[in-house]
Amino acid sequence: MALPRVGVLGVGHFGRFHAVKLAARGCLAALHDASADRAAQVAAELGCPALDAAGVIAASDAVLVTAPTAYHHALGLAVLRAGRHLFVEKPMAATLDQARELEAEAKARGLVLQVGHIERYSAALRAVKAAAAGSQPLALEATRVAPFRPRSLDVSVVMDLMVHDLDLVLDLAGSPLVSVQAAGTRVVSDKLDFAVAQLGFANGARATVTASRVSVALERRLRLLGAQGEMRVDFLARSLEMLRPGGAEPRADMPGWGLDKATWTDHDSLEAEHAAFLASVTEGAAVEADAAVGLRALDACLRVEQACG
Image (cartoon, rainbow, N blue to C red; front, side, top):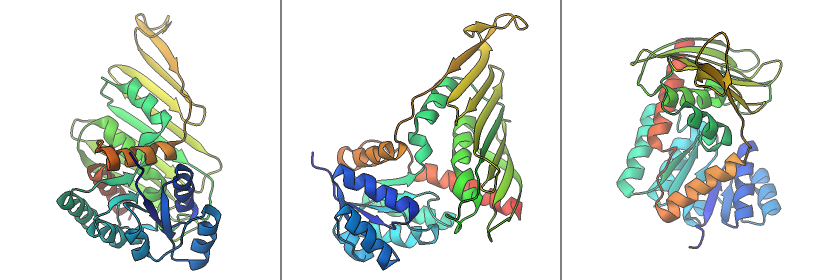
């Protein structure tokens, strides 16, 4: 089956990566950016036309909206109303009403709508979910911090970084979010640059999620606690440790319990994300990071931002 023609709206820092990967697959149709100079530069680099937004949509079977969040709704609606399949970067939109309108439009037209929750396609998350299968965590802790980089400052650290871990803990908790407490601050931008959130779920589980883009160094960790034991994950070291009944390395201080260790081999998550989108477009494969996932994560982000004040 021939690959669909895919357009890209927005070729800034991350949008350019999308365009590069699609060009390597041989399915990049055209691109657009609010900066004509940037669009021309990337188009020349990749050997595709730089058009206005309407031209990109007309030239494509499916379109990636990788422009700043403020434009996701308007551009996404234009894509869907033209009968094109839509991939929209996270966060799905700036408001829940905007996100719901995109969801309704895609559903009414029978079109694919995938949200750019790239972590769902990572080898690390696959390893975590496989290890956590069948368990019910009662407490979750997620940390994602990084040194300052002058990009993605159109949104808060909640929408930029924390959104990934909010999606993860919402999935692992397996229960509706019922309460949010949070604190955060602006440090070098006019948006939240640091935030910590405490989440409560209907099943009694609790989660603490920390995100910062003004940290001394990179850190990405996850901890799960429950009646089945503890899991600790260091994503940068690619290490996963589980203390649980019957673990491979027995614990003398805890008869019947032992430690299991695991790791994973990283793969190109962006390529995996694109492959999933193209499979949905051409083969009707189920969309993992669908509108429901995007809406749930956006709702959590907005509640954290509101709680931060």
